[in-house]
Image (tube, rainbow, N blue to C red; front, side, top):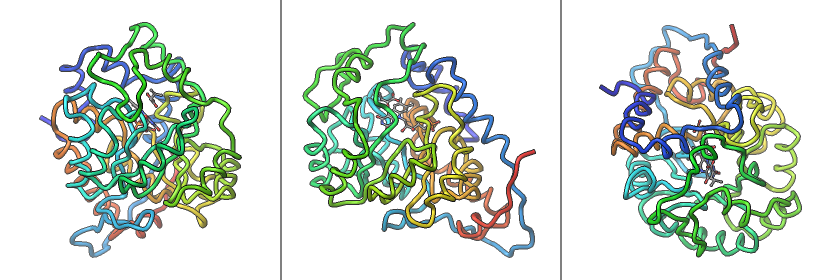
Length: 340
Ligand SMILES: Cc1cc2nc3c(=O)[nH]c(=O)nc-3n(C[C@H](O)[C@H](O)[C@H](O)COP(=O)(O)O)c2cc1C
Ligand SMILES: CC(C)CC(=O)C(=O)O
């Protein structure tokens, strides 16, 4: 029986080919950061308030000018047809039904226009050589509400599970937004991504991008400041789910200093390690405006349970808010927190 969002991983593992399971579950190097993301979330304590007189906590929020049912977005994740034949479309439809944004990956295995037609979407942009403006214009044309530029992948992290498995995409799964034919994900990234992308490039894109621009993959508050100076409307505090530089700090540990540096000037989101509604509440208490959820939703996609998974997440967040005495997310932000 599935009683929590975190339960989908074991179900998915039992149905997926082991190399696909490893591609999704894995981190880089010795997976120090992958484990640290969880350990750090588990280490956060909250101090609840009582007798708060709440019959129904309000989980809704405003992010980037729109109202959402939960302070949660579906993290951009490449190649979702690895998990289910309908891939991105199924997960995006579930996001739409749950009233949350779906972030389309540059490397989606369904064309971005088809996804944006079924869900309120943001578009995640990888800095591909020569193709950035074309992709951004397609996203704007398709009605995406924001562009999320991922800045922590100049090259792919060393994912040892994938190297040992010689992981390759099956012939019917590929990057449908691009003309590229991809089997070896690592080789494609090395050939197609621009490793020397810089703040000047970000400023250049900001001048040309007519919709909100969010920078994903910030850990240092100095970079957060730099992003705001470049005109970013938001940042995502993220270590890419422990898949890029191994050994970096947990993103929940990086959050506070980033909020202190830029929280008054731009939206601060967080991802990497969110596995429950309680984790969402912890991230809000530590200053995030919202979170992105990654792997748990791919596990749910693999067992065709994305609607139920998002419903469970909502219920977990509601329960945690009620038990903590928070009527709404503004109340959640006032909670005292610490570490044991
Ligand atoms: C299979 C997989 C594919 C991913 N693909 C992308 C991507 O295309 N673009 C991107 O910005 N981040 C990508 N990410 C990173 C996620 O957006 C997110 O930062 C990370 O998964 C969050 O951590 P979590 O899985 O612990 O929730 C991917 C992550 C996974 C697990
Ligand atoms: C192909 C990868 C660069 C996609 C990604 O961001 C990831 O797997 O973490």
